[in-house]
Image (cartoon, rainbow, N blue to C red; front, side, top):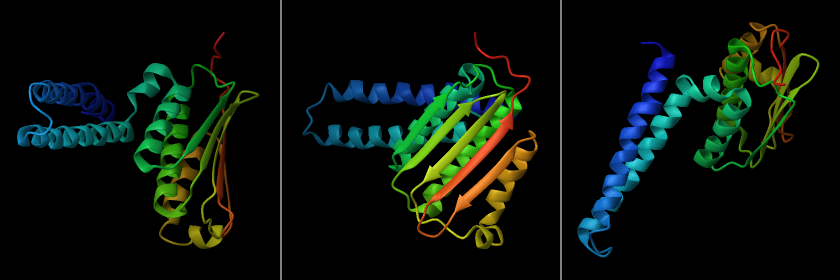
Length: 206
């Protein structure tokens, strides 16, 4: 069973079962008074099921976002960024301009994974209160920029340390689709990552 299938099983099957369980709990609660111990116990169970559902959905996205195949890169990024902002409590803006409706799978996956990794790094290291994500299509290419107002860092020092492995991994992922990757950061000045990838084979939406 590959990552795509596992992701679909988690998202489509497990999450649906959890949704049914949550609805069943709410249905039973309607028959009870809110002040009763049983109602309160069911509310705790409902909250736990809701958290589990969020965790399952997050894991499914990490394995492979089915929405990326079904609705395209722009919609997939919008959905992930919205979920990320809700999960982590960090405001994230997203602007997409002239993005092709159809993007080659390896390119879409690359840009999606880079966005995931960047936002994870923001959560772990940046101490940021705002993140801005832009995806721009122009001249048979896509440019992805992700910037934050966090604490920033010295690029050379970061690349030489253990946390630099994630940055190097992103660089290699972008290089594999003939793209370029630029990282800008400085202590106290936030961080910006700019990725450019060619999309010569992409068919633009008419």
